[in-house]
Length: 169
Image 1: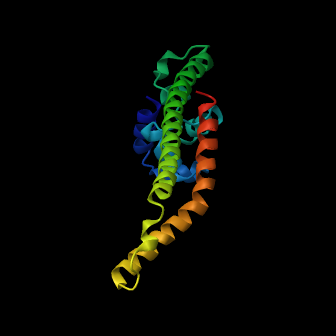
Image 2 (image 1 turned 120 degrees about the vertical axis):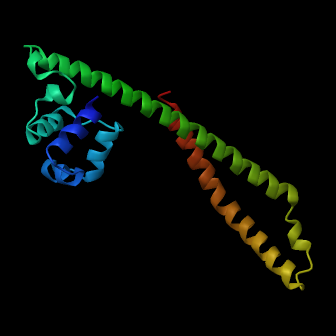
């Protein structure tokens, strides 16, 4: 509701997203996110938008101008609570996706270690006088060398990340 009203009112005032962003001292991407419903402005910014667009906050949030009541602030706060709840739910699902991505990365790193250990670096026994096997042997050796030195840190990072993102599940 807010996102659609903001876009319509901005266009009716003849402003581009960039022009509105400059007037509000934000970046254009912020206005774009508001209009796409990916985020919402806080209460102070909502008042600034209202003043810049010369439109009551109630209109931005979808209220009719003629239906002004003494408890407009309560209505606005209730609508902002609903919007914030929706954003919190979206953030929670993003957090779950990150958690499972980190878990999968941890598993892949462990699988990589197992593969390197089980293959026992077979490429080291290749005939490296042949240029093709020499190049492939060098590449395999370089991969194993880098993997063995970087993977423990990556594994620790993914496990810590998974634990930290999983805390507030």
